[in-house]
Image (cartoon, rainbow, N blue to C red):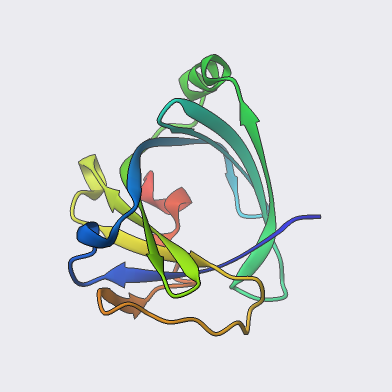
Length: 149
């Protein structure tokens, strides 16, 4: 079984000059039930389907399975997805021994910028860059599944 352990923060400063790269992301959902979220994501020329399931152990971790799929399959799934879509640009920013993923949202979520860091354990220590602001881990308002609404 695969686990995702991540923390999310609002971005309060300039980070783009530190980014190693970026990719355009289109994201939709086939299920938004908190215990069986099914997401389809196109990232540049690649596509993925992801299944996430909440756990009662911690707001920092949940079960996650991600599979790469052909982009044409993703296009078909996008057509039958639930209403709502997320368009964002993801930047990859190394800092310390981690690589932060910084999402700059577009369209209805324009102006929102969230930085995520994936950890190996819920108590792993990490360095926060100066451009990282308030932590929003566990705040449902900042879950991507809720940003489609």
